[in-house]
Image 1 (cartoon, one colour):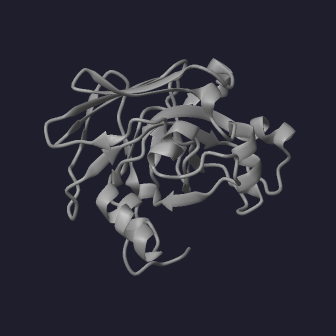
Image 2: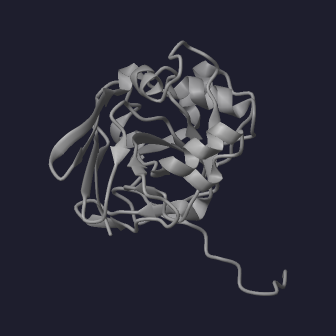
Length: 233
């Protein structure tokens, strides 16, 4: 039995809807600018360039149960923290060099998630050519609802993706607007990293991202998957 100098942290688990079991989170990958309109609002060309990815640590994941208003602590070091609503893909079967036509078989389920972003820090990183971790990978930067198994909902490929703040709609897109589909992003990512069960992939956000302040309530929705309600505290 391995002896550690201190107790290792418990694995991060996201409950599976309709089950007593949880999905153990291994890695969190995020796809950048995967909706054309969002790419434009961020100042990029929306043409179908190869996808790019960044990561968040697994302990950035903050679970919010169905029907519960979660909390997002406003992070330090920023005055411009943005919401980004996303469909999250949960990998249940690992692999590398996965073919697009086989990729769906590697997906365990889906969830609704928020890629919270310290936009001012991210923008500074872009200007200086530095990594994005300070803007993207901070504590509790990935609120997420329960994992919904493929066996319950299939593979959603169309449907509204929306986010409202205090009842006012800010983001609206459709899963059919993804530049890179879920099978395509899974296949592409598997050529860069060997995917493993427990990996999460945040699939990108529609246009309309914006800042929140303490007291704001964000309500995200992905049609066919669920809702996510989070208050900024």
